[in-house]
Length: 569
Image (cartoon, rainbow, N blue to C red; front, side, top):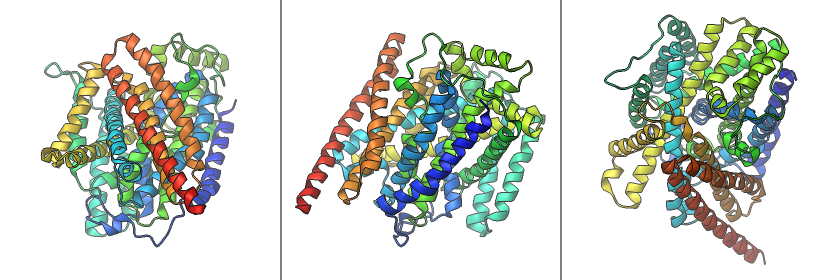
């Protein structure tokens, strides 16, 4: 099958989702009010609460939620064939992710920008809130640990990406100062910043950065430590200085990168060499049902998006009507990234010499066993396949294309870490307030606790060098989807309280929660058999906690339905 067909179907579908379905949700279900005073204005402090241009905020939201997950997940999931992965990404983006992200922003904005955990206490019960926050903390723990390991691995695999990736931090600070302190318009900082980011890609190729083992610490471990030191500092800075402009300029780069990839696909017209349904999955491959729906989390639906939507995005929303543009369109951007990731790792093989059959054999060989597709099915596979397509379609030098895509993937993962550590600090500080523990209310102590927990998991799961830390991925996907289901359930309770139809959030909630719970139970057995007892314990805690939150929310939902029925009668 020609990849052009797949790309066209995917793009048309997500466009229709934004044009029609998001408009329906905005007008009929969430009923956005342009005159509603958002928390960004009502609670403005110019640190966390800052009214923001919707394009800039879209950039923050898009890149904060995208990260590396819509690349890693689909690249692994094609082991079952490209068709199930593609269908889940497209349907999930239109009817699951968009509704979830959009709804989380709306729900938070309507409740003083409370995080989804705190919102649970207001909408469901305080007991549900306390349990919900445990799930949230574990998810953030895994998000930050997984992405730190992924970035460190890519820095080692592509040393040319190091200088461009860190240059983006300084470009972002410059843009933040120009926009908010100097008062410069957004156009020129955007143009100049984007030019700098692409120019330093050549610099990165000339001066690749590699680390040698130092004091017995492996290069991967050094990068992980450096990344968390950076994330700790970044999480304490005002959002306008680094987080917001970094996400915005990375969003522009992502937009350009997606344009390059899709343009190359339409010009090169590569052939998808992977089968629609793979009958020869590697020995030990888990069943497609329910594992597909947790392997591809971001790119279809992701609970982490709800944390960003209610944790940082809702505090910066200028007008309530911007929620549709920022939330639903942001999730569509991630869906388009997941679609092109599927194309890169299934059609990129056709760009090699030797004809179609050798290309098919090469793909099958790459996904021939659990270890090989675990390594191939990730950022490296996306970079290699995407670079071949970009080189063939647009005539870009192969090395430049590889560095470009590696930098793009690293920047997304980095912005997710920025937001993730900040959100984890919020959780620790909230616990300090809830349980009257003054030290935890301190930002520096809370950040140290958050980063310390992430480092323990990254090295505890991956060993002293951290390179094995990606074994957290399946558990991350399960927890992510459970949180997405819980968030949709909280939104549904809000809708019922307001007397509005809740089926548009309840149907996705039931599906994704069922798949996630089944996957968690499957993984529990698998992790126990492998002797990964720390992850077994985490999995058990998450399952039990999620079930109790769902019972609490279901009780609240039925209570509100009965109250509504009594009011009508």
